[in-house]
Image 1: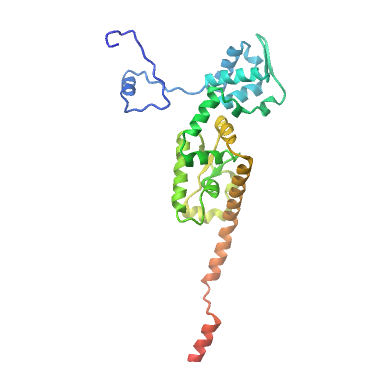
Image 2 (image 1 turned 90 degrees about the horizontal axis):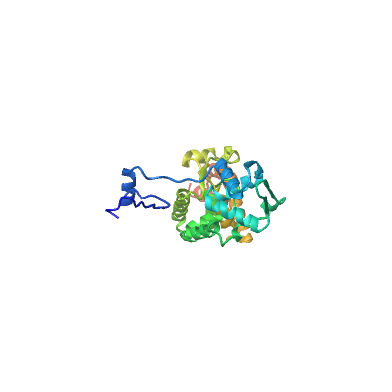
Length: 276
């Protein structure tokens, strides 16, 4: 290989370690490329070429569905189109157009495509996570909108345990790893979360960080691993915790005001009078 200069090698990896020898050589030769998923327009062009039809013949709902599920991965795009045609959800008229059965895309169970690289690789990714990270991911699939760390802790961390703060730190570390793996995203707080009653608490401890799962593929596969009873339990615990955090601060302030008033029990007053 050292003598033959016409031999080229291609190395594919999920993350490029800058301390690796091969990565260092690629940086020096300006041959390190970062691959990203196709955009929606590129996905439409790829779909039309694969199906053999013009871009105008691809339905808008099909383009939106494939773009969300496949994340622009060409292999996932081919697998999704092949599976839709195999299940007769997608009918293609070669060279002319394609059509999707009404409501078919809403009834598809993507998690059942275990034989595809798209679903099989996602399942392997979820199974490779640590237990607390996998639990955090599964609980996050129960929320349609943004959620917070206390929402997850309401079902995984006991408030009366001796290691409550340590459990919260472990849960926070798990969510940060999921963000780094681009499984969940850190988002801004919704307007409904900005309550006046929380202003004092927000000022003392900082603003609450919100997360959201925008990866449709991971959400679908992860949700299939959660039972319906577990999903309802996670939502119920999070709702109870939110209500308590909304109403409890005002009640605690009222209680603190009552405790600040000096009170002498009646039996102490009687004993004092006897002494005098």
